[in-house]
Length: 369
Image (cartoon, rainbow, N blue to C red; front, side, top):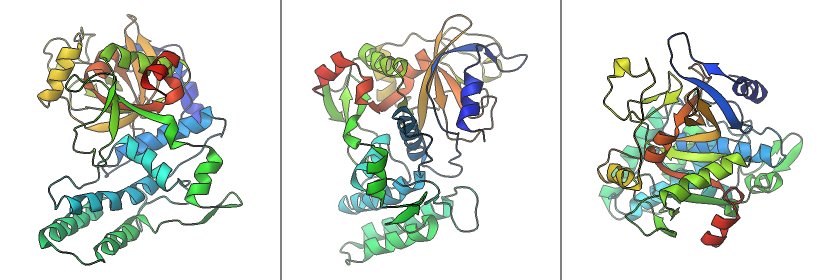
């Protein structure tokens, strides 16, 4: 795993190629500081890895230096909320490891945050995150509780017991770099304000320039997203990246053109076999508000995975790409990063979270910020 300075050096070189036969070459246009790539391993917690990485870049932008924020702290404080939601809906809603970026922002708002060194959340006798057993136990417990009907006032303590056993007890107080903190006081010392972050999306089944609750299964907390026309939505992303901000990105990664191994994601305009996909540069689909909406309606665009957009680039033909930090470890040619085409981002983005100051004054005024 490379440190942040080495990653910056890697991505600031003027031309990148991915092997002798790989047809794409990239030149970076803009790249913000980011911390080292992590590995969510066998967990469904990409939402916390992506958004914690985003917050770490925010801290560097704010002059707080390189900080390593615990992903599992947000997971630990969010699970009980999901459990309560499941019980109140009597089991007729989703319960599982998935959430969205705003749930990290909500965790920071309601509880605070802690350094990774204080709360790694890695289970006993392990060196990687693996939630298979924990998730199976929690799912079985929640299903049994919902089916039981009337409950005691202790059921939530049972959920806490499982989380404590697998992730660790809630760190109510801790000492870090010689100072004593609570999660809330550490958040305040870092200067992170949850109210500074906004969630954006772009769909036609709700009015533009208003907020609506996005209908995806992992939106258990019923978070609202400001709905922008597609051109405005992309302009908001581009303005933020151009002015030194980064983006927490929720997207569909099920397309054949999304290749972590090759460090790229594209949206071919025509059918191309998987075997031939990256042997030559192919034309990409022209994305419109209409075909984007159709893909969402038909469930060919779904809420799959969250990542962290840290910059922009172009290929040798001048086509625009976004530099994306994933949380699947460093096992590709870009040490865990990918180049994602503009067409792919336009079609396959579910939503983004960014700092309100990255929006630009005109959009801030429109949104009443």
